[in-house]
Each structure stands twice: as structure tokens, then as C-alpha cells.
Image (cartoon, rainbow, N blue to C red; front, side):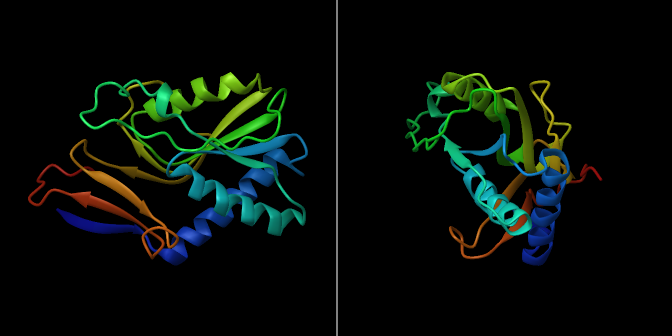
Length: 186
């Protein structure tokens, strides 16, 4: 497969800063708003956004992580079983404004599972979605992000990967395409 850089480290950092500023415009001081990163990859987005928000606001922002393993609709369809991650929500979400964070929005099924899992913890006043990469034209469910880092038009045969220096050694977003894809979208 051929790979193309969608965002390099500098562009990724600038995108995360922009998203943090967009959140401040809507959520102001974050006194009634919390970040929840979806396991496994959304937790990296949440950690980076949390750090940016704390720099901008000058105080701590509540954040947690949510394991959606047992809420996925493909949980029992895989040949190898999914291993659960750790949920870390040590605060009440009741009547809070929740921002769910994930790295790539593709079919919408992960977000649906995230909403199902989230509602087992209480009833928030509002739930918004922040995604670093939005793969348009690929939805199975009517889900869209409120905050988008970058929109990438892709084919179903292509793959988008977000790499983090904490796990892969470098920050970047890559698009993998099959060689000889003649019908690539813009």
C-alpha cells in the first residue's frame, strides 16, 4: 500500500490548538464541561486537547476515558476476541456538557457504541463530538462531528491512521491507498 501524509507533526499540533480554541469559544471556562476520550485511540486526542485547554484557560479541565468494547456491534463477530480497556470516569456526568473525542470518524459505529457506553454513567445535558479526522462519505449511521480537525475524502478501500509520538514514535496522520487506485476521490 502507498502512504501519503495528511498531517505532519507541525500541522497536527496546529490542528489540535485550533480545536482547543474552538472548544473554548463554545464551552468558555469548562466549569460544566468534560472531555471523554474513546478507547483506544481517542484517549490520545483527549490528552492533547486537555493539555491545550489547560494552557489556554490556566486551570485544570476534567477528562476521562471510556471503554466501548462491550457496546460495539461487531463484538461477537470477530475471529479474535476484543480485549477490554480501562474506563476512567471518576466524576459524575449527570447534567454535564460532554465532549466525546476520537481520532477518526468513519462509519459512525464507534461513536454509537460510545454513546451507549456513556449513558450507563448518567444523563448528560449535552453530548458533542470532536474528531481529529472525518472521513466523509463513509457513514453507516447518521452521525457527524461538531468539531473536526481535518476532513479527508476517502474510498472504502483506503485507510487513515493517526500516529502519536507516545505510541508510534512520531505525530502524523497517514492515508494508506492501494497501489493503482484509479478512482481516487478528491
